[in-house]
Length: 438
Image (cartoon, rainbow, N blue to C red; front, top):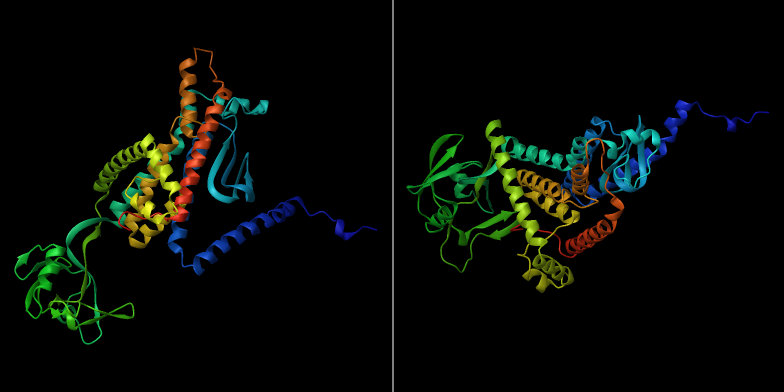
């Protein structure tokens, strides 16, 4: 008698059900991440993490797309490392997600002469491709970073707006515990730009605050720009010693009761606002920004990886637990880990979206530059090998470098990178990275 439990599902149904387990694992990880984000109110952290993941996978997409275009065989395109959470195969390539989202990779057949390749695949290996195609594939990741940085800077100038110095502008109106504030009585509104006060045109923020502080009880003429129209309002600052402001549900004394009379009008000011420009201007500014950030990146790398910089870095790591010593070196150039990048990215997002865009552009360019250092396992090492092989090749006789001779140096370099990375991670755990002025 046939046992129903031994029945075999149709091939199509079986392949779909086999994929449910890995898919469930991936969904559990995603839901857990979202739940932690909600519990700890860490949406800025989640946004920055997703942005960095996108940066990593766009880097790998550069290698993937150019390798496919060049006719090379690409067997894997994965986010993360370690155990596989979920994957799917399309043609000769497997796409998927692994458990540790600390990077990503594309596996191209025959990246070096050390790799064993099935004879049918040898013709489509990276090492057998022409010099221009190998150069294109190896440098595509860093080129993608440059493109992403340009798009981010363009978006900053053309869409979100870049911070631009302006006349003192009202951000919000203060709430007094008793009665209306002078600003509310005068009819001021958030967004009003103050272009004159007491007959003084184009006052800076510091001058405006000082002028108001010196005139408690005096009737002042205030000219504001509201939507492109100038309005003249009359306002009388009150003595802050006798005013209690309500901030976030708490009552705070506006000025020291024992100090001199201090005029206040009850506004929060800024001297900068985000302004957008046209596409052509934005493209020009994005290009200028790329050049500027690139120069700053090279200068920073030179400072950090000099003998003095490495000595200072070792000192920072060794004294990271000592707040007095670490605070004294806070002004020195510092390396940040991926954790540090998330920390300052979340701070930037809490302050302003344009600041986050600029920071992500800077991170992209920095990673792209570092990745082109001519040493394996970085992409720059593959570029250097391709160039060296091209120089040594003769017509009809391609030269292949003996990569095995480079491996001891590559291992030492990799060990150096791991030590520096762990040191930076340790410092960012002990003392979280801070934005300048944060």
